[in-house]
Structures are given as C-alpha cells and as structure tokens.
Length: 396
Image (cartoon, rainbow, N blue to C red; front, side, top):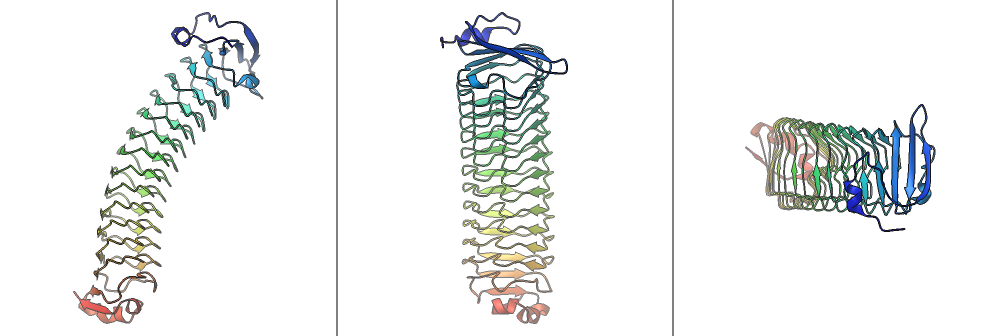
C-alpha cells in the first residue's frame, strides 16, 4: 500500500473530502433507519460516515484488518460497535467525531500500533476490553461525562504511563488497568465510589495513588502485585478492603487506615514485607485469613477495642513482631493466626474470659514467654486451651 501522510490525515476536518487514494472495498450496514457506509482506500485509510448506531452481524472490513492504518469517522455516527477494529495491528491513527457517545466492548482490542487516541466529549461509557492489549498506547485523557470504565478496558496496555480521569467517573471495572506496567502514579477522581477486582493488578511501576474521599470499597486484588507502591493513605469513607487488595506490595512501608473501615479481607496485605507498623482502625471487628501474613518487617501492631476475631494465618510468619496486646472485646483467634512469629517476647490479654484459640494458633512461638492477664483470670487461662499453648501466665 502507498505510504499514508499522517500529518495530512490528522489535520483534516470531519467534513473535508479525504483524498486517500484508490478504493479497495466499500459497503454499508445498519438497521432501523441507521445507514452507515464504509470505504477502505489503498493507503490503509478507512472512512466511516452516516447516521446512528452500528448494527452488523459480522465486521464488514474484517478481512482487511491488518491493512487498516488509519480510521476517520464522520460526524453523525453515535457509537462504535463491539470488536469494530479488534486486531487491526497496523492501526496507528483514528479520528472520532463528537457525536460518538459509546464505544463497544473490544472495539480496539489488540491494536498494537495505536499510540494515542482523543476520546470525544460526548462519550459516557467505555465497554469491556475496549483497548485491551494496545501495547503502544502511552496516554489517555477521559472526557467529562464518562461515568464507567468497563472490565479489562485498558488491561495489558504496557506502555500506558499517563491517565487523566474525569470527575464524573463513579466506577472502575474489574481488571480495567491490569498489567499496565508503565503506569507510575494515579489520581482517582472525587466521584469514584468503587474500584473493581484486580483493577490495577500487576502495575509494577505504580508508586503513588491518591484516593478520593468518596471511595467506600476496594475490591479483591485491586492493587495486588504493585511492588513499587510505598505508602498509602486510605480515604475517610472507606468501609471495606477486599481479599488480596494490596497483596505482594513489597515496598509498602506505611498505611493510614480511616476509622470507617470495619473489615479487612483475606490476604489483603500478605507479603508486604516492608510494612513495619500498623494502627488498625477504631471500629474494625474482624481481620481476615492471612490478612498480614509474611509481613516480615512488622514490629508494632495496635489492635482496636472493637476487634472480636482474628482469622487463620492473619499474622503468620511476621517474624519481627515482638509483642501483642489483645483487646477486651476479642473472642476468637483462628488456627495458625500467629504461627511463626518467632520474635514474640510477651503477650497482654485484656479479655477476662479466655478467647477461643487453636492449639496451633501460636505454632513455633516460645511457649514460656509471659502472658499477662488480669489477676482474677490467671487460673481461667491456665485451665483453658491457652494453658496447653503457654506455660507462663502473669497477673497484670
């Protein structure tokens, strides 16, 4: 095909006549009064014009997908259909009209040469897998009005280093930015209330996050495998942290929890080996399985007075943890919860009634370390499961 003049293409207006060479193929599609035409030229330019939404059983230009180098859409087209340009591996330039309000799922999936795109101001939603695997895409600016980003929408965009989110955004879907390895910082908009499962999983360069105050939940694995993330301040409205949310964030040394958090999911901070101290939120009632397991630098831990249960393996292999003070509210400690905490030198328990434990809750912990309880509870502890785990009970 003849070489395409990108400068000429990018400078053309929507109503210009495009001189792109000889026609290779052409056709039309649409129903219910929507008539859209397409023309492919021999320099790789695909021109789409007409009125209304897309409607087709098969992508009309699919056999030419590797030949398409540029797409120009004329004003009047209101949507881009599912998989419209998927695997157009040579597509490097696209002009979208302001009339487009939605982009369908997988529309640009696997467009590995697409390095930039300007999204139209009228856009309100981005479908699932829309830009999945666009490995050359380096930046994206969302227009005001976009309220949702679909599942895997920008997953595996390995060159994506800059994102500007609109204030209108309320939700980020599952795996939306998973494995965006070049993304180093994000500022999430104030309107955002939820971050989907694995939304930023494997963003290995991510070192900074600014959370909005309106965020209420961080779902499973949202930031798992972000080894350069060093510090996070969670917003005041947050109530729950999902399973594996920050698992494997090996540089994370500081967390500030808001008082509003009432639950921390399974393995939420597992393997955060740089985390040295934690003050758990005031109204926290439960700590999930493996929530802080293998946080090998964790030396200081403050439990809230509201805590009732500590899950299986919650602090297993926290080898720097030197002491524990359990609140009066605590009623149960699950199996291997503190197994392998080999640096423990004493435990304080404020609960007058011994919390239920398993015989392996403190596996590989020195059985002779002092366990301080109220003077009136010493015998109760000696005669409970605690007495089969520890031998040195002392009155406070």
